[in-house]
Length: 134
Figure 1 (cartoon, rainbow, N blue to C red):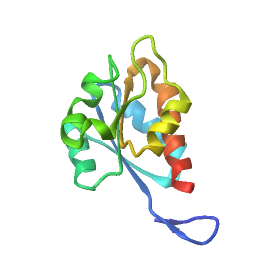
Figure 2 (cartoon, helix red, strand yellow):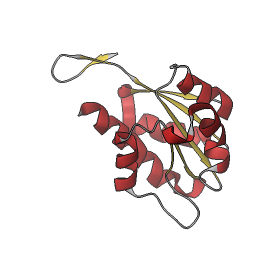
Figure 3 (tube, rainbow, N blue to C red):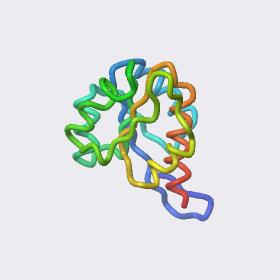
Figure 4 (cartoon, rainbow, N blue to C red):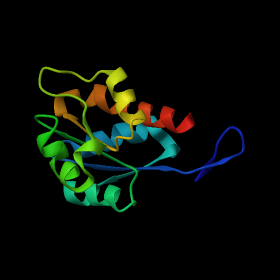
């Protein structure tokens, strides 16, 4: 926990990194953007999805080759498709407006293709951080 600029105690955002590919790279980008506002843990897909389902993590973020298969399959099964968002797919890069909308709608699991990590992860983390401040 930390104090915000107004002296109010903020809860750290807990992010579980699952998915099939590049978990360490994703976690590194999340930590770089979120700093002390985030607690990032790398887990297997099932551990990450269960952490969100059980309230031990606030968000699930993962990558795979298609954006939805290995990145989100277990999250969809355990958390429910309504709480998941495929942020990018092959040939369809992430769009910041769609990511912000998904976070505002209460989506908690995000999947994307591994070739979009450098674009998708900052969009997701910034949307989460900005949504928390509103």
